[in-house]
Length: 132
Image (cartoon, rainbow, N blue to C red):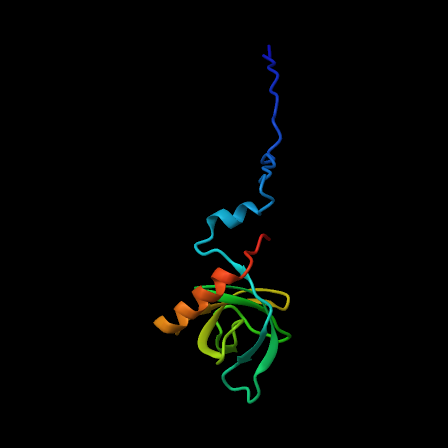
């Protein structure tokens, strides 16, 4: 004789959590807040004579994101040059590719002096925060 039991299976779908402030949930786990920045950026790649030009999307004290038509991989080292709003001289920094989605790259700053960090923080204080 076989004992029969009924088992009700619950779907394995995580509940949808809606953030009332309309901010993505992942924004809460970021180490640094991101700020909107739309300026020209030049990216120099070792071994390539001419730098690539693009537009920045966002910035924070640790890095910058930009749209650039080029082909880099995560971990590639680059030279970055851009001017912040109200800046008089371009910032020239070394960076590393930390993320890529199509032609949108996330660069982490590797060489950032105290003065450059203060300049970026001053600019961020005047920029709107990214909410996406």
